[in-house]
Image (cartoon, rainbow, N blue to C red; front, side):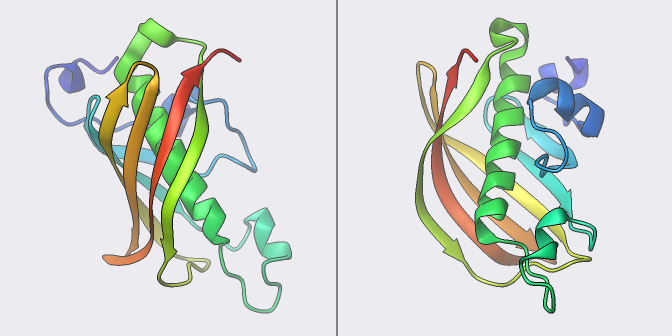
Length: 155
């Protein structure tokens, strides 16, 4: 664990660290970096959207738009990495499973070349169940938002 983050300071996690925290891999790893981490509370994920994303082959070939559900998945992966990082060795090897998605709203299309900032904040934690609010922004404008719940479980 990052000692600076453990002492309450900011932490940044690169892609290799994220891959140690969550099981997702290409083409379904949808967060590139975590910044502004407040252990157990919040984080900002970064997703750099490129024209090479496999979903653009069919969504839509003549006007590529990132599917909204994948933006919500990006928020969830950011939250999952935050949870795994926050718990440290306590729950190593366990997975974070989606339980619910509420109030998903999609405001603007996300296209190749965009950088999405994925803001997640813990709203509630009861046992192994975590509830988050998430807001995705491109150039400061909200592109999607949702509340979602996840559970820590064994694979």
